[in-house]
Image (cartoon, rainbow, N blue to C red; front, side, top):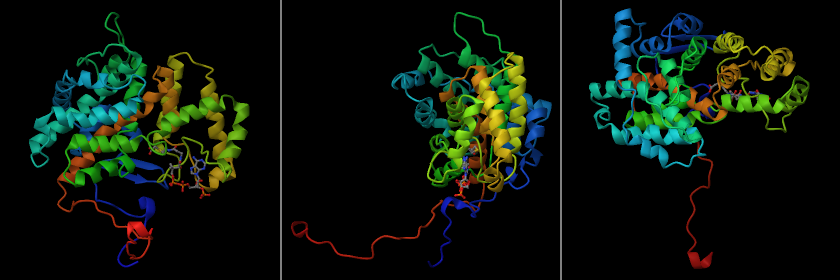
Amino acid sequence: HGFFTFDPGFLSTASCESKITYIDGDEGILLHRGYPIAELAIETDYLQVCYLLLSGELPTQEQYQQFRAHVTRHTMVHEQMTSLFKAFRRDSHPMAVMCGVAGALSAFYHDSLDINNPKHREIAAFRLISKMPTLAAMSYKYSIGQPFMYPRNDLSYAGNFLHMMFAVPCEEYKVNPVIERAMDRIFILHADHEQNASTSSMRMAGSSGANPFACIAAGIASLWGPAHGGANEACLKMLEEIGSVDRIPHFIARAKDKNDPFRLMGFGHRVYKNYDPRATVMRDTCHEVLHELNVSDHPLLDVAMELERIALSDPYFVEKKLYPNVDFYSGIILKAIGIPTSMFTVIFALSRTIGWISHWLEMQSDPASRISRPRQLYTGAPTRHVTPFEQR
Ligand code: CMC
């Protein structure tokens, strides 16, 4: 087939060079700018990780304060965007709303659209980091018919998100620090993961010169699918469907059955053929949250633990190296915090926004970068000729 390499699903194609994230899937290693993910999750906060992914270094305290001030300056969205939300059906999936409103930022912020202007690129990056939690919380508030809450810039990034999700205008809302920390960890653990489908979509859209808000919409759309970011929602639905430990063998048998499309959600990964290092931190955080909320006997957690135990010892999963991934535990935490299942992938999207922007910015300054234009192996009809319509 001539000059092309046939690589469906890009199993062995590196699409770019990048200095942002390193993954060794066999060893279960994930590094951001050289730092192990578990250290970042325990020693830093999400805004520090954002700074790291963008700039390459962890911030000094002074740099951190400046960065935070920049982020908080942009947390509000244009007031007219509220009308945009109101045009959606209330029962829309929040990811459907997010695809639309994130792309619509390009209709509101004309000073961030010139991709050849470094100032525009920078302000677009800040706008996205700052506004995604606001848009995410608005998509939730709209779905339950409650008023939108303005951001509170005195709170942490995670604390402000929880405030916009759960506060109501007539009551005081206090953020629980354990839950705030857990939310922050969920953000950190989803911040970047090199050339996954959504980041590749972001880069591919950006390779044509499209503006960053349009590219983010492409990333969000790609994340939505159950094989990618939609897995956290699908995983929780699966745990609920399994319901009790005694029903697990039936689902394990289904997962192994080649004629059944059912898969164990939250298991397996294209790159990790070992324990997902994010899942380890997520599991510890999950226990902390359940302890804080006094949930000692949580049926979903019992199902999850038993599922994990069986999957890690069952020859099918062992031979295929199917380990729990990041989404296996995140859903249980989010559910315990009171976040509805339909918001899980939205939270993934807002966390991953920093990864998408960092890759988009890196691509803009890469001299080797050019429009993404894969080829194909044509398997259709050879040349033939049109029979006139009246003769067909
Ligand atoms: N349950 C049962 N069997 C599985 C599973 C699973 N979750 N995942 C893979 N397999 C089997 C699959 O049937 C195949 O078997 P065989 O070689 O006999 O045909 C083998 O393992 C390899 O699977 P694959 O589909 O060729 O692997 P892939 O790299 O194309 O897919 C994956 C990776 C993540 C899409 C897949 O493992 C999956 O569908 N997992 C469940 C969904 C999920 O949890 N996704 C979240 C990924 S982590 C977060 C993110 O990156 O967004």
